[in-house]
Image 1 (spheres, one colour):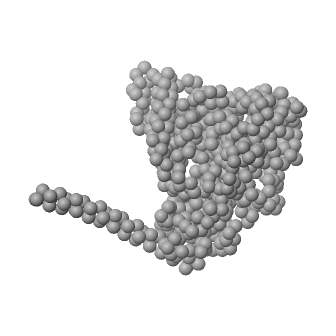
Image 2: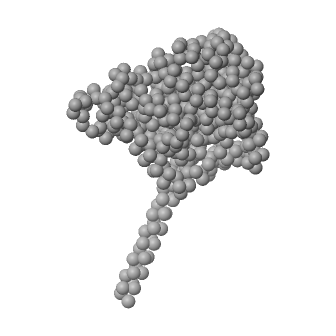
Image 3: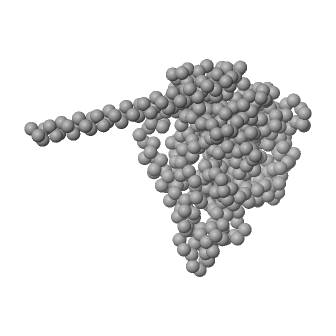
Length: 547
C-alpha cells in the first residue's frame, strides 16, 4: 500500500508540474500578446498609419485574407504591395502587427525613409530573422549576419575581389561558362520540348561563382557536384519566419535535411580551404574569395610554407561562412534576374530588337561576340541599353529585401513630418513594395527600360534611391558589378540566337494546375526558394532564330 501511495503521489506531482508549466507558458504568452497588441494600439491612437487593428488578432486576419487570395507559394514580400492596393490611404510607411509570428513590423516602401536607416549615418542592424534564414546555409557567421568591426574586417578584406577592374578580368572565364549555357539552349531548341529555363540559369550562375569564390570548377552544367546539389536543396528549408507556407517549416524532414546538407557543404568547403592552404597561394595576386581569406590568415598567423600548422578552427568557421554566402548569393539573385529579363524581353519584341541592335553595333556579328568579349571585356561597359533592360527586370522582380532591427529612440520621419518609433520593430525595407509603388515610379506596372536612360529632370527617370535590388549604403551587395557583367554576357551571347516563349499555359495543362496561380494577373509570380524565384521554374519553349 505505501508503494502504491508513493507511485500515485509521484504521478500526481508530475501531472501537476506539467499543468503548472503549461499554465505559466500560457500566461506568459497572454502577457506578451497583451503588451504587443497594446503597443500597436498605442501607436495607432497617436495617429500613425496601420490597417484596421483587432485587439485579439492584430493584423493576422488581414494577413490571412491577403495570402488566401494569392497562390499558396507566393513570396512574402508581396505583402507590402498587396496592403497598399487594399488600403491606399495608408501611404508608403505603416505598421503591421503579426505577433506572435514576428515582432511588430514597420513596413517601409518610401526610398527617402529607407535611406534614414540603411545609409551610413544611421544604420540599423540586420534583423535576427536574417540570421535565422541564413543559418541552414552559412551557420550565421557570414557578411549578411555579422555586425560592427567583425563585419567591417571581412567586408574590407573581400572588396578587391569585386572591384570593377577585377570584374572585367573575370569576363573571359564568364564567357567560357556562358558558351556552355548557350550550347545547352541550342540542344533544348533542337529537341523542341518545353523545359524549365531556371534550371539552366541556376547551373550557369553556380559555375561562375564557383570560380570567383573557390577558383574551382563546379561543372554543374555538365554533371553532378555534391556542394551545389546540397546548396540547391538547402534553399527549400531556409525560413525567415514570415512564410505563407507553414507546412515547410513544420515538415519533420526539415531538420534532418538541413543537417545533411550542411555537413556536405561544410566538408566540401573545408577540403577546399585546407588543400588550398597547404599547396601555397598561387598565383600570388589571386583575388578569388578563398585566396583573399587565406592571404589575410597567413599574414595574421605569420605561418610559412615550410612549417604550417593546421588551419585555426575559428578562422575556418568564418571563412567557410563567407564562401558559402558568396556562392549562395552569387548564383541566386543572378539566375532570377536572367529568367525575368528573358521573360520580359519575350513579351516586348520591340525592346528585344533594340537590345539586339545594340549587340550588333558594339560586339559585331553573333559568331564573333564571344571572342570580342574575351579580347576586350570593357565592351560590356558600352551595352547601355542592355544594362537598362536588366535594371528594369530587377525593378519589377527584385529578388531580396532588407529587414532591420529597430532600436530604442531611433525614429524615422516621413514627408509629412510624422515620426515612427522603431523600438521593438522589424523595420522592413520592402524592395518589391518600393519598386512597384506608383508614388515613386511613373507607369510603375509597365516594362520601360528607357526610364534608366533619361536625363536628370525627366519625369520618367527614377526617383533618388528608389531602385535598390542590391540595397544601398555600406551594407549594399558587394557583388553587384559581377552580377551586371554576368547577366550582360549572357544576353550578349544568347539574345541574337534564340526566340523564347513562356509556356505556363502548357505547363498548367500538363500538370493539372488548380487553384489561384497568379499575383496581380502575373503567372510568373515570385516564390521563396532562397531569394525570390519565378514560379514553377519558368517553363519555356525556345527556338533558334532563322530556323
